[in-house]
Length: 172
Image 1 (cartoon, helix red, strand yellow):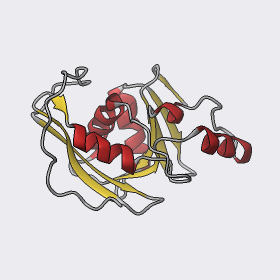
Image 2 (cartoon, rainbow, N blue to C red; image 1 turned 180 degrees about the vertical axis):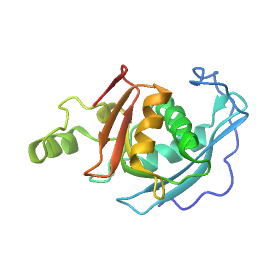
Image 3 (cartoon, rainbow, N blue to C red; image 1 turned 60 degrees about the horizontal axis):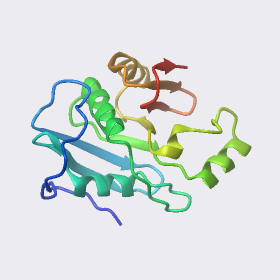
Image 4 (spheres, rainbow, N blue to C red; image 1 turned 30 degrees about the vertical axis):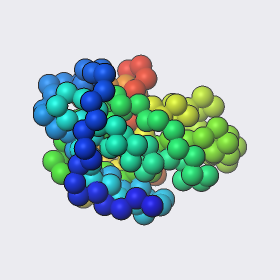
């Protein structure tokens, strides 16, 4: 089980990662809460120009498919996008995760029960996330995601979340 992580994991040197979407601070931190599992995570996922492998492992675990506990790698670009959007609506915001990685079995189950679930969802590749930030207006979160322009943005006010992905620029 994940618990709140108050200290950043040790940095393990790796090959330089892809350049972030905007200017790079020395550290990037995400605070997340998984609404389905009740798990929280606060972690430095980017430090000194690199993704932090231990933090990435913790994030992959938190964003796993909650229906069957399958873990998959999350696209690092998605985390940079989430960080930028979160910062745009209020620094130190805890991002509530509705959906991160989705296994093929879960995606099929959702597609059969719910309209609007893509057969080839980017959630299947760890390239999409559905979020809300308590205390922040959902419309403001949606507008911030559109302004950052990192990929697809979906607005679901009835379900109280915004979808973001690292695919081509589009919105709905």
